[in-house]
Image 1 (cartoon, rainbow, N blue to C red):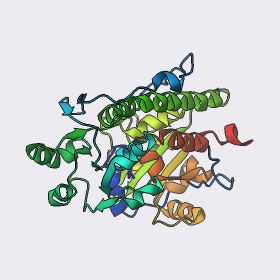
Image 2 (cartoon, rainbow, N blue to C red):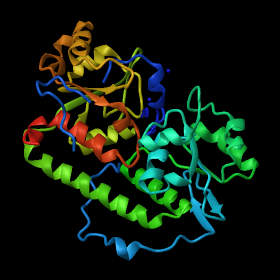
Image 3 (cartoon, rainbow, N blue to C red):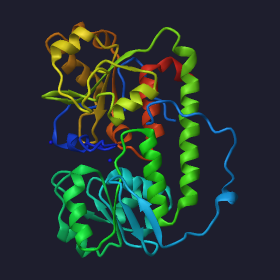
Length: 347
């Protein structure tokens, strides 16, 4: 079968990483008549901090040894500030660079393509999220390896037996993202940068939600997110993408499912009749919106749905919505623009 992520199951989320091996309909651009989407989780909206953060107040020196609790609930001791870090998730790689720890990295996976500086790192090729060469990791002599959740359990245990520090973080909500940022920052000597980054994310998310409020009086649009097309799969409310849809003021048409990425029937989808359909745009996929809309309209029964009839099918860059990391605000804004285009018409 894309941290694309992705999304790939990134953000968690790493089931979305596996999207790259599928052939979903291409999904960044929209079919609503506008040329393009403007540029610019916690299950509940975060309150905007009442006061700003002064960077000078957070300018303190790293302190080691440091103990960091990870996703597994384990307390990991980092004796010295790591200088040979390997990241096994695109979202972790983006977090490291956002914190200013990019120059402490020696390697990342072949899926890590942002920021551009990742091109200078040793790339570890993986067949799928759970299969990573232990030999390739050890060869780089890492002093810290950042992994995901259960899908990296085996490699995490192997590295731990070799006495190589391993920190595991998995994010399916904004709260998780904040925890990952703070944990990675503490382990790498950038705790001050973490608070600035978290504050920036909270502030920008609140700004987006405030911008949408005047346009939500008529009700929330029903949203279907297509993860894969064969079999038809979607993002449930407990997934990272499900959390983004809720934050963006949408109503997930499969909000009643308990699985993060369930397989659903076309009959049920057509019956529930979404107002908006979101599809991930893979970098290697077609970028022709008209062609994608035509494919959807040719599926039995799909042209009956409001989203297809009203040409409210949107392609959104996969990396932005499947990687639960510091670019979460960009992903949220893309979804918000698809659901409430009128709120962004003057931008």
